[in-house]
Image (cartoon, rainbow, N blue to C red):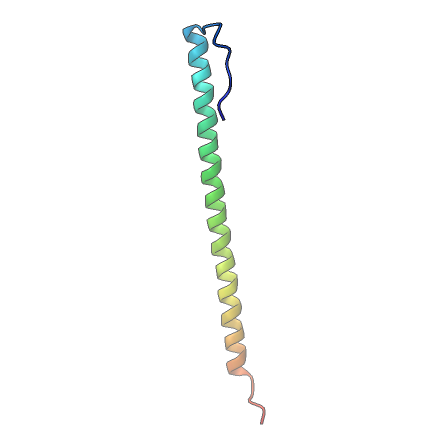
Length: 70
C-alpha cells in the first residue's frame, strides 16, 4: 500500500532514508508473515494427510481381521 506524502516539503536525506527503511521493513515483515503462513499451512496439510492415512489403514486392518458373516 502506497502512503501519500506531502511533496511540498522536501525530506532531508536522513528523513528520506528513515522512510525508505520503514518501507523496507514493512515489506520484509509482510514476506516473513507470508512465508510463516505457507509453512504452517503445509505442516497442517501434512498432519491432516497423516490422519487420513492412519484412519484408512486402521479401517482396512479392521476389515481384514473381522470375521466373515454368512
